[in-house]
Length: 346
Image (cartoon, rainbow, N blue to C red; front, side, top):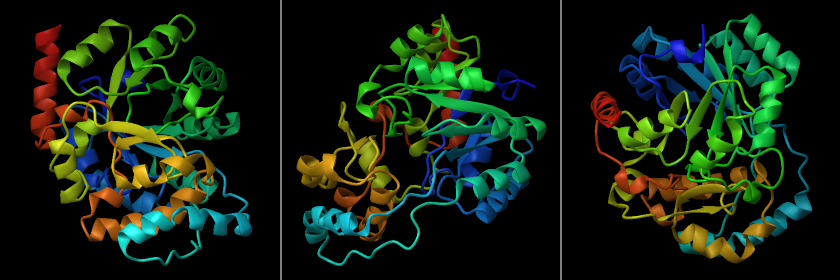
């Protein structure tokens, strides 16, 4: 079994955390001939197993599960109070100056990995850091293929050396969090096609490209340039099966030209999304916020309250550079359109 043999078409739906990749979305992509991906970084170990079981009730096709490779942080509570003060302008905009201290900063990665192995997806993908060789061996022993995320050539080389089965090259165009773990996040700024050209001569593994890919013409171009598959996130955000709220979806569908930019203010890790007031209010101090996952946990209640109020100005509206070409379709109709466009462009 290889990555390329798992799906009818070389289209992988990107894992997008926060309830976006519902079991219905993941299964619909796999049923339509792509590879659906469950984003599990924010899920408890039990929820990972339960959602994998849910997906299997909806499809008999292969699917992937994604995790953030991370450790629970050591929290400096004095510094945390300073971080709370930096968020006061956002809280004032929300009309509520209270900001609770989180009781949990992130899930335990080792426990999540154990749950993933119990769930036994066809593919496990990882970002934010690299696995140990023993962890990759455990996955292989369970019959699970491993995909590592790279935002630069050194990361791709390390994933190859550690025994990954494929590498997802994340270009700067991609929505959501940067997966950088070697060097500064802001320094890994190559577009995905340039990153592919840089990695191809030195990487023998299948290369999956991610970042700004929204239609079949781009799929054809990526495959012609040497990619074995594409990974698409923003294109699936606006499908009927996506777990995003109506207000978020409306903002995506109304986007014109490129209205995205990167910020670390919301989560403590560089991420691309639609520009909104949250980003603007935090621009001057974003370099001072604590790193992920502390800032992400700290702002979670703000984003949750904004979501309930349908206030998209204070939410995290993660999206890639191609958002202006997002389509309001079912997964089945989107996959059909992508495949037809790809075949026409070949």
